Length: 478
Image (cartoon, rainbow, N blue to C red; front, side):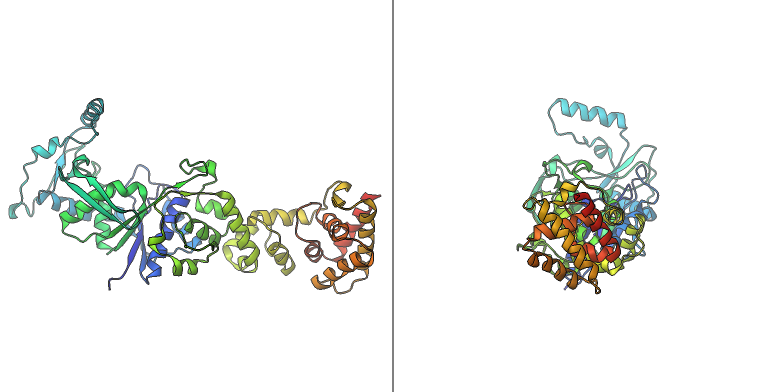
């Protein structure tokens, strides 16, 4: 049985964003589900858009997400392999499968405008293909090709017939070969285009499956023809659907989409990001929505990837991140990366009481956690009216606070169990309701109508600070 090998092949032209991260994740999950390899390739042949440091940021993003390529220390880098691509292109020319094109940009532009004016699909006319006189034969084996300035190499596409792509996600997709351009494979600067380089690299890396964005589906027929020209077995292809915003428009920053590392710096957790983007196009076929990365590896099946567009919902990501913070806060704090995020807002160490408090607070991000802690230790500002629960009144609220202060002052063991018991006794012994006691105590401690429970706040603030805040609340009522 052949070993499954997938790859993620980003261009270092910017940060790793959600769409590309999903592509990496799906390739990782598919390979690891079958005990295969997940490899990294840096496609840096677009020198005009190349950004120094982008490769390192991409690798940092993948590592943070836990989607670590098996060759992360030595990824394939296309700019170091130019001679291989040139040799492959020259082989195609010698075999009569490619040719040198010397048409200028002006000629090509005029040709395109003329075709558009005639309502014809714009494509290269093949002028240089017709002029090409290079023939096959041993006499050309050592032939060197000198490309005039501005000239390129083009592959010879079939002029008619159907090219069928057996897509892992979309099924059988047919293309009319007569509508496809003679694709450029070596540019005028000597660098290969994506089409040639990706085929040569995937063959050398022994890639068995390619999962990539939907935008590359129209290029796949050209890639299949290149495989045929070289006499190589192509990998199996699967093209992932687009990710749209809630308004069905292309995903953009106005929908909340940003780079992976920006999500990290805002206090999102890698486990939540992995979980969220896995569900952008993959259906586990159950009602379950929370999966750890190892669980995603076990459950992932390519047949459960949808071909329809996925919708990015920032509110769902916030809900999911809050769930991870709530249920895994003790583990979260122990990781170096998340410690750094909290340190960014001034918190180098969280006490066990604070961890417990955060775990029950419903915070969306670690940034929210830091802001809450910042506010927690400042004296709260609020109007006296906020102390009175909507189903209570002034007298009951005043009684609830006074009796709570009395019992709490006498309490020696300041822990969650005893604090819960004290407040419950205030309710039962004075013929009050929870709204008469728990509500005003919580507001007195937090200054907010939305916060963790009064017991959790009492534990986090400690006896002295808690009693002082309750006394001030009683003064407000007077």
